[in-house]
Image 1 (cartoon, rainbow, N blue to C red):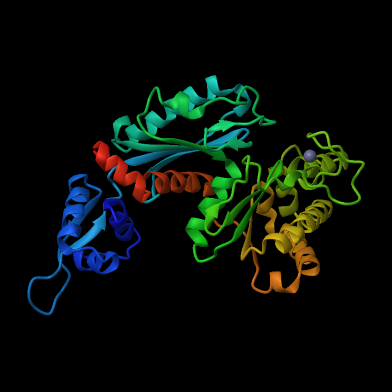
Image 2: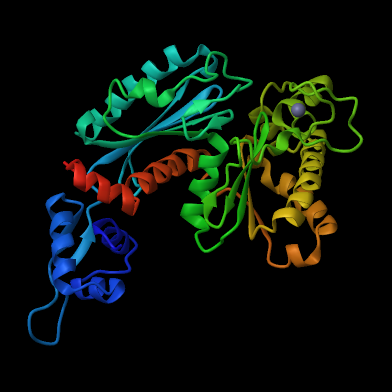
Length: 389
Ligand SMILES: [Zn+2]
């Protein structure tokens, strides 16, 4: 059935800008289109703009999606840094803020803190909590997506099984979606720069290493939300390295930012974090350059198998270490093109992230917007009379 929600989708995607377009695209009777459009207009999800230039007669009224019909609030919570955004319904950030915040403080400290800053963002753009259509939260750990609960996240004490949507429901009457930070980054990067690519891997190389999988233009989370956890794939020849997960030779324990910083410290350099490693690379320190390039090769080893297995059209590399992307990508490319099958690498692009630190909030906003503006969700909301202000 082609309900009002499907008409909204056509208008949002720019595939229909007039009533005639909608009739043509849906095959519905003109009167039916008019009826459904009236509902969308009444809920202020669509507005009519002046007619276009015409060669005579009355110009057709143009239809446009009202991206200001509400807003979404999103938080990309990292281990120690967070980025919060209030965005319109087209995913355009209206106000944005970054903070230092320790996720290990636990949900009862972190979520009230997020809520307070959400209220500040709303105030900044002159909107109220009732204008909020959805909330998105990214966290640095595995998440049971359907429940919005982190699952045994190693660096998030107190969050295991905690219902993030349950906490926000005290303050907002809107859906709350929670996902792993790498997944929302993958979504943000794909939506913004790679929509013509059906299959994409987004690899975050920060303190740890993780991978978001876009398959058929959708995030692939796997049976338990653990898909893409490449940081704990074993690489050859490093059985002397013990990983925080308890296994030996994990990719992350050899090539993650923490491991690289540790090796530089041992060599007498001042390096505590991934960013310190990048600073040393930028300063032209040969040892730093060498270990980042080696890290790229180790990452390339795991990705070469992933390329054969999944055949992505693009691999986007982000995360703090990717700021030294010339060195990192050189190593990645070298091994992937040497080790993957020619058919799989024929059109493969391996590129640095273009959104950088903002990939997560943009992806989280898109995740929420696609959820609330899904045709079925719109039809249900209209039925319940809550689609828009
Ligand atoms: Zn491990």
